[in-house]
Structures are given as structure tokens and as C-alpha cells.
Length: 282
Image (cartoon, rainbow, N blue to C red; front, side, top):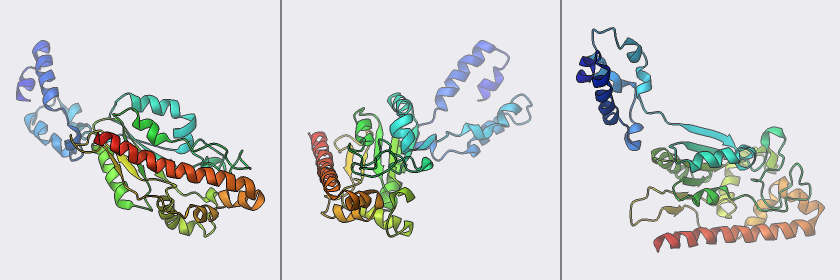
């Protein structure tokens, strides 16, 4: 810093020293989280008494490495903004994305999105959505260098915290997809039972918990499954929500068919995660 200050009158020398300084001040991903504006103190001491860098020192809060998070809903991430999301994550830039997945367009009354689950009744799918939910997490895992986590705060708070910390620490793109109960689900016990519904969503396999960390140490699995084998209570879980139960009451045969396919998807999804872990074990 003192050399740089002394070379201010020489553009070529100042530029060369500035480049060295820039490289030495480069932040690594782990240290960045603990840096703050107080890191500017050594720089302030060097320039003490000089008016020249006052504009720089006035922006000392910018010296700290910033944590960049992009937060959006499933309608944006799965549908209307997917192209942009995919482009950003594929770029390898160090950005973090948090998707709040309510499985439908909550801001417009609960219309269907690609995040809407198979068999669910919503706007534009009065007879139940005939296609499976888009597996956004698995799609992003295919890049191999994107940190991916499937979380559910009400079901496992520690796993959610671990995922957010790992995503923040990862020097590259990350996406954390969180299941978020919504009033449009029509939870029959009321929204006060949302936490219980989240726990059941994970226990039944409806919403698997996992973390895929490309930065995992050599010899360890980058994919961690944070949930158990799905139990057999999916039907009762679905019957507790109007988005599934309403079709069962109106079109029982169609509902049974769609829920049967959903149950197969749940089992198949867990088996795919287990197989993926085995692949990385080699």
C-alpha cells in the first residue's frame, strides 16, 4: 500500500503495483464471510493525513466481499424465469439462488406451474395435474459444478441451515430449493399445521431432502441424502390437503389413478438418489 501511495504520480508504476495489490487482496470464498468494513483500517492508516484517497475511504464498506443471493418463487424458477436461471447457474459465477417452492403461482391465486405436483388440483388443472412435477434440483445437478440442495425448514431446520452455509461457502453457483406450504394447498387442519405438514412431506418421500456439494473433499460423496426411505403414509398426507382431496371426492377413480402414479414417482425418486450416491462411490 505504501509503495502504491508513493507511485501515485507515475501512472505506469502505479498500475503495476495496483495489479499486485489487487491480487494480494483477492478474497477466497471461506474468508469472505468474516470480512467487514473494519478490514479497511490498515488502508486508512497508510493514507492518514492525505486528502487524495478520501473518496476511496468514504466507500470503505465496499471493501468487504458481498454475499449475493437471488430469491424467487417456483413460478419464476421453474417456468417464466427458468431460461435466465439456467443461464446464470451454468455460467459458473459465484451466485446463490434460493427458490421458495409453493408448488403453484401463489401470487395469482394458486395457478399451476411446472412445480405443481402430479394429481394436484389448481387453476387450469381442475381434474388434477396430469404430468409430474419438474425435478429442478436433479436438472441442476447434471452440470456437476452447481451446488444443489433440497430443503424444508419445518421438517429439518439444521439441514436447511447446513445447506445455506454450504451454498454460501461454495465458490461457484448454488441453488437451494425450499418447500413452502401455501394457503392454496387447502391444508384441512389449517395453516397452523404447516410445520406438521412439512414433516409429513419429508417422511412420506413427497419432498426428499438432499445436498449436492461439488466441493466435497476427495474420497467423499458429493451427494448427501438427508431423509429416510419413504414411509407408507402418502395417501393420508394427500387426503389432508384440499388440492388432492377435492378430486378424490369428485372423481375418485381419476384421483386414485393419479395418486398411484405419484406414489410410484416418490419411490422412484428416492431410488434414483440412492443410485446416484452409489455412482459417486464408484
